[in-house]
Structure formats: C-alpha cells, structure tokens
Amino acid sequence: MGRENLLALVATIAHGSIRGKDWETAFDEAMNAAATNGIITDEDLQFQGAVGGLLMWAHKREDDELTERITKELGVLRALSAALSGVVIDTGQLTLENPLGLMKRWKERTPSQV
Image (cartoon, rainbow, N blue to C red):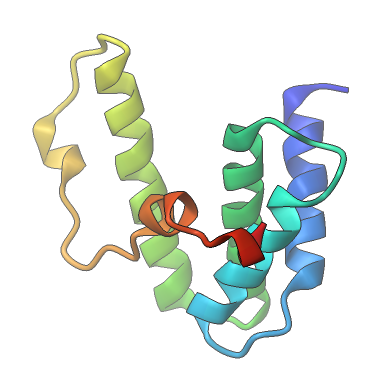
C-alpha cells in the first residue's frame, strides 16, 4: 500500500473518531485515533493523518476560517521541512500571524491521548 493510501486511511480513521464541537477537542480526538490506530506506526503519517482528519472535519462543518488556518500552517511546516533538507526557500513562508500550533500539540500530547 502506497504512502498516500496509508495517509488517507489514517485521516479517515481520525476523522471518524471526532465527536468534539471545538477544533481543540476535535484535534485531540483525531490525534488519539491516529496514534492508536494499530495499523500505521509511522509517527509522521500519524500526525499527517490526524491533521487530515481535522481538515475533513473543518471542511464538513464549512468552517472556511479553520480550513484556511490549517492549510497555511501546513504550508509553513512544508517550507520548514524543505529548508531543513537544504532547499532554498523564501523565509516569508515561515511566518504565521495566528498559528494553531498543530505540531506542538502533537509533540505535547499526553499518554491518555495515545
């Protein structure tokens, strides 16, 4: 199974686990489902799947502001990853006015969220 298919699987699992009404609770639920899915053990795919599940949740709720914030934050993470790989980037790509802190929340999740 290709990486894209695995990512889609984790995102679907994460999205299906969301019961929360606010994005923080929704992301906690998505992170828990992604980290404990029992199929995918790669933490990068788990994180991406949790964010994908949150994006699907925001889109379904027609929350354009949250969808845009998530998308912008992912763009910054992609640019940072590229820069760390030696790719020259525009440093303006690394700034956000109102970050959600998705990666920080992932790294700081508690054992009960795993």
